[in-house]
Image (cartoon, rainbow, N blue to C red; front, side, top):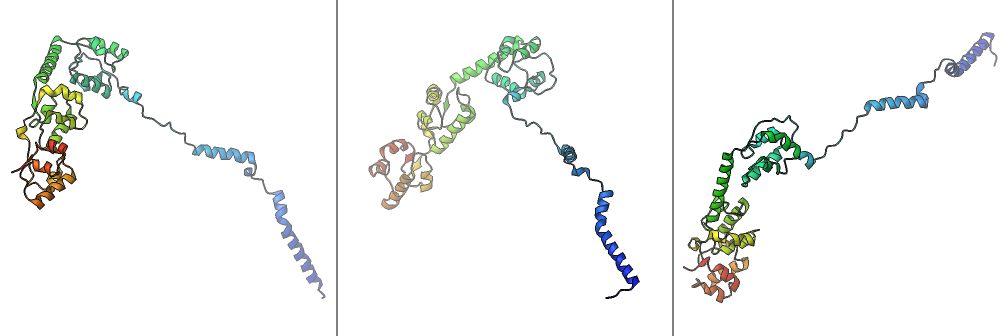
Length: 295
């Protein structure tokens, strides 16, 4: 193939341009390209540390509940004023620098009949430390009148507890808690069990009240009585199975047996018939005979 002179010159120029285009990137990178600082491991580490520090949030200390801290009074500036520890209110005790719980301890001591006859008695409370007492002692005033009133009330309460006699079948919880050793919990249980039984036939039945101590019962016997005429009687010829089963002394089997016997044989003519026909064992019969009747 023959090329003219112009064509040969064109091919040479084109070849040179292709070669130049091929080697230009290397020439440009060598002469003009500046290496990034991020390519340097040391510089990159410093930059990364900087951004990490911007995202860092210091950990807050976790707070834990502490009974010791709870006992400490709330941090408020305590007030100082004259007060009688036998009559000072809980809010005033808090103003004096006690915590709410410490004030409740002092008030509970007074509610149980405790009396502060002198400032040294107040210092014996475990919630009153030496520093607190030294600060408050000049402001403690215990008039003779307040002591005599408190002592008189305590004396009257004790005298009432010593002479009070209650009927277990008519008393209510308010009357029961006047007895020494009976709190609201025991009082509610005594009344609730009376309703289940239909009344008490004996003082000793208090032993069946949940959690009632035998020694407490012995100490209370002089203050208790039982009117058995107020016991609700169950007519075995008329009572339904469900009503019979509700009595705490009758088992499910015994209730079914009594109702079945009555429906099969006919009316029951005497309570002894229940025992003779083995509808009740001797122990159950002796417990129940005061609650059953035949009409």
